[in-house]
Image 1 (cartoon, rainbow, N blue to C red):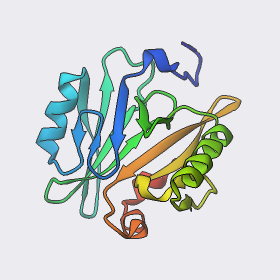
Image 2: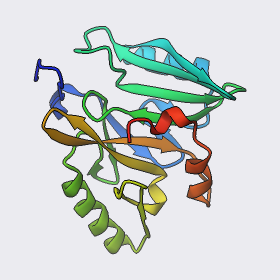
Image 3: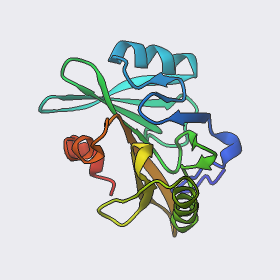
Amino acid sequence: MDTGMWPVLPDVERDQWDYLPGRTLGPLRMDTHREEVVAALAVHGFTARPGGYGPGWKTVCFAKDDAPTSQAPVECYFHADGELAYVHVDGRLGPQVTCEGIRLIGRVPSQLAREMEAHAIEYDTGLRFSPSGDVSCDRFQLEIGAQRAGDHIVTAAVFFVAGEDHSVACDNAPEAVWWRW
């Protein structure tokens, strides 16, 4: 592991999570409440700490005790009623998330874009482009972003439940979700 200012965990040191769009993300069900999320991640060694508040939103940050920095590998955003709405997975320290065989986190953005495009062509699905130009498959219900790692860039992602209209979920996200992009 890089012990400098911008550590990036190799895949072998990351938790390995599978993602089923709109349903599960690793140990999380996307229809759970705050207490269930805290309990599910605690089983996997993550400690919760409050992450801030915004109008109508609560944030909980999750890290492991041996984390190389204070940056939270996983941040969960909850509606005022406590229901999970968004999960941000950090590109440098977060779990490796795989969806339909595609590794999403900590990747070189251009490599991930090529895999997303090939997947969309093979399965005849649409492509989405984030405001910063990052590519993802339309039905994956996520936004890919690029995150600085020293002189390199790695992919991070925000996962959400969108139903049929993916733009609605993205557009309604709390501002704190997007501050890294």
